Length: 221
Length: 84
Image 1 (cartoon, chains in turn purple, red):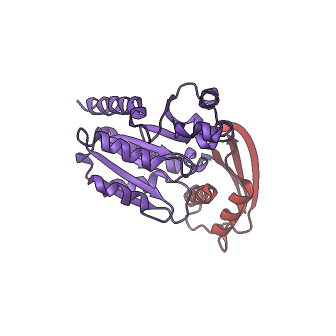
Image 2 (cartoon, one colour; image 1 turned 90 degrees about the vertical axis):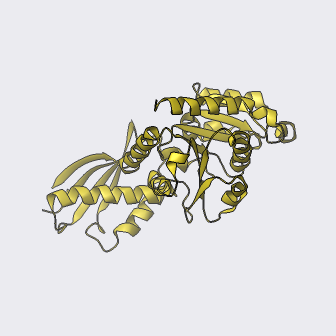
Image 3 (cartoon, each protein chain N blue to C red; image 1 turned 135 degrees about the vertical axis):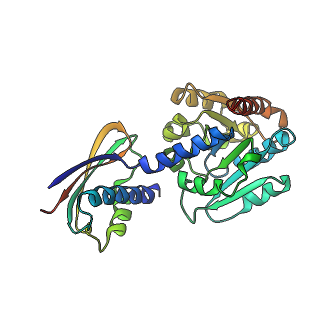
């Protein structure tokens, strides 16, 4: 006997993701999902970002990592709430993991929650965590061809930070060309250029982020 | 690697559907049809490996796995064939 099912398998994850999103909205917390390939600079960007905003906003971090807590240890100096998720080899975070991690955070004492995903340009694109915004950090050293090759990740990003732009000459990669490739995949995303060696390069990113935090806070009023 | 999670979700959906009709889960599933939608981010071989591991020794162990490619986004459990 045939039984028709027709159910999207991701409905399990998406349903928990929707619950997470509703919870963040209720608590007026801006949840940001940071995605990238390994070594693109997520944690360094996070260090600079937290350092610039911690006197003004209450920050928490969920750190996704295969096995280690090295990234979380780098952020301990900021004396903020950090929850480590080790996926034990899993290549992405999913909504259920985030839902569990939220329970360990005093969310009433948070304005912005950064979720640092596992470094991977493929799988994290398919898993909604309940974030308000998805930020893709893309190192210039990865070349200009990755937006086409990993298009799902680029399509689903709200912001793309072309990072390590100071390395463009050494890597022989034209930043304008990279930006054009990104825009050919996703013309709605905000595309910015950043590098850890020039704190001024984070100015637009910080302005955008603070604007989103304020919008999130006002939504509760 | 996300195929492992997708295999897990698929099995969970199949169990939910079957339990509604057969609370004792005492019928063998002979075929499962999956629909793979765009973008095709699920590798069949990898998915099948994990799915087969999950159903070993269960009422689904011998089920034939069939795949259809569809235009709509997502990965679906499309239908099941259950022994009479």
